[in-house]
Image (cartoon, rainbow, N blue to C red; front, top):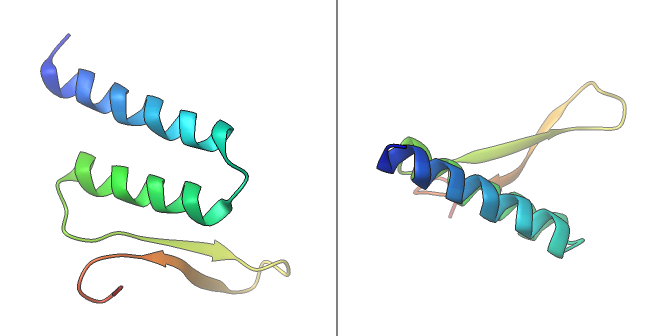
Length: 68
């Protein structure tokens, strides 16, 4: 297994651990955003959630220059 594959699997495992170890959605979404940035080697990430009416998206998590 290549080093990048192991790194990806480790990140996914850590996300799975955080999902089952906390009920705080913000903590879980922040962890997912952080992992996405690392895995894609990007400078920012954002997560949008669909409202209950399934009509509008809103930013829940945003990192990087525009997110702070």
